[in-house]
Structure formats: C-alpha cells, structure tokens
Image (cartoon, helix red, strand yellow):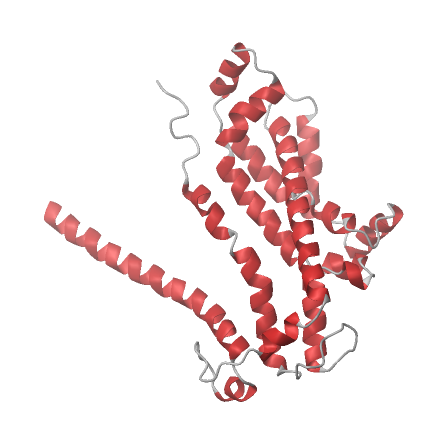
Length: 292
C-alpha cells in the first residue's frame, strides 16, 4: 500500500510540475513576444503571427523613445510619485489597521462599517475631481499621491493579519515597559514584514501604472509622469498628434514596434522590484514567535 502511495504521489508530482510549467510558459510567452516585436521590423511583425527572436534586430523604436528630452524627467516623476505614494499609503494603512484590530477600541464597529461602506459605494470620477479641485491640488503631485493613499481592501486584510498576532506577545512587551507605539514598532511591525512587503508592492504597482489620475489632474506637460509621456510617444509614432520634442535625426519607426517598446519600458522597471520582495511572500510570519 505504501508502495502504491509512493508511485501515486510521484505521478501527481510529475503532473503538477508539468501543469505549472505549462501555465508559467503561457504567461511568459506573451511578454517575450512583446520584447521581440519591439526589436523587429514592421514587415516581420505583419508577416509572422508569433515569434520570440526577430530575424532582423533594429533599435529604432528605442532610439525614438529615448530621443525625447522629456522622458528622463517623466521617469523621475513616476519614480518620485511611486516611492512617496507607497510610503504614504503604507503609513496610513498600518497606523489605521493596527488600532482597528483591537476589539476594545471605542467606536470600532462604526468605523469598520464606514470603511466597508466604501467598498460598495464610491463617489466616482466627477466627485473625485471636484474634491481635488476644492483642495487646490489640481496640477500638483499631491493629486497623484493622496487619492490612492489608502485602499479599503488592503486595510481590511492588514487588520485581519494584525488580529492573528498572539496577544501574549504584546502583553509581554507591555510588562517589560513598552508603550503602545513601542509595542507596535518593536514587536508587531517586525513580525509583519511579509505583509508590509507584499502590500508595498501592490501600492507601488498601482502608483506606477496609474494613468487616470495624471490624465485628470495634471495639465502641465513638464509634470507628466511616465505613463502619460509614453502615451504621447505612441500617438506621435502613429502620426495622430504633435507635441513632445524628439530629435529629427531618428526616422519615425513603425507604430507597432514603438507600442511594444513602450510596453517593455513601462513594465521592466516595476518588474525588477519583484525579486527583492519575493522571499517575503513565502516566509512564515509566526515561525518561532511563541515558544512553549
């Protein structure tokens, strides 16, 4: 019986690995195709339905993108908004989720009801614009940071995470003379690094890819973040609009290669962040926290 169980487990492992490998390939291949198209010629993109390595490499699309003097500035703006926005969002999320995780908090049920209400009902685009306008935040970087500074869904998940931390750890810290803030900083926060890393990544991806806020609230060209600037580049390559300055020495490349190069340029920077936080996704949160 044990022998049959061993063979069945091995067959299951092989099937599981093969299935996950096939699924991984289906998710990676489209991105490899986009990378290949960014280096390919227009004729090859039209003729071949799918390829990974183009037969002829050309860098005109990337030369066209980097010929804009505004692109480095837009990249730095997006980087600034992403870093400051992520730090602000995590500060609000953690400092609000921790008190709400305590059942003895006065007015906790009312606050949770109001928070849950926002999951079902939202103001919409026009009321949000009117709020930003009334606060005199139009055409400012705060308009890109503050509206997304707190996610209700992330707040609820982090609150539930804090509730799972044994109360005995906090009680022992208070017996040793730790204040509430000290307990949060020295006990709760170190144990919460996996959830901090995970939701920091979620917030960072949201700020980096945010397109609507820039389109609605930013009117000065020099304050455009990367996503809006890349949109302008695609439109210029398609011959639809005039606007951003590009060096004339570069011949306008095919629109398809530019679109794919824009996707690569907009995706790779945030994609490079994943390896640095990957270890926190699978790390045991409470391993070794309580003994005996």
